[in-house]
Length: 159
Image (tube, rainbow, N blue to C red):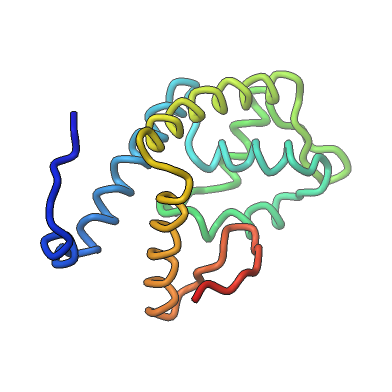
């Protein structure tokens, strides 16, 4: 499928709420469908990645606090943790989470599928175009008083 061309004036008159929402639904829907292959949700995925990135650094409270702002489905993080533990993918050592060998294998399988989604999303879009699109969205968030920083808190000012 080829994206139909429109004039700058036509595009500038389009409602950002529609286009940002349509993009979010399509991208997140595809991510969730790929994760569902292993009966995972986004909170499962976020948990696996955070624990893999800092083994033994996250406890239940800290990880729940860290992930809650990204969750649009009011997930029960205790249930997510319990599920990953029951699968044998996550363990607690001295009150902190670590991935098991099976958990790391599952995380890598999911990462491979999500990498293919990312490649598809970025097809035909240069890194500069992608960065420009994000910067426009970030400015809009900032204009409306929201947090336009990158997830994880890298501080840079966009003008």
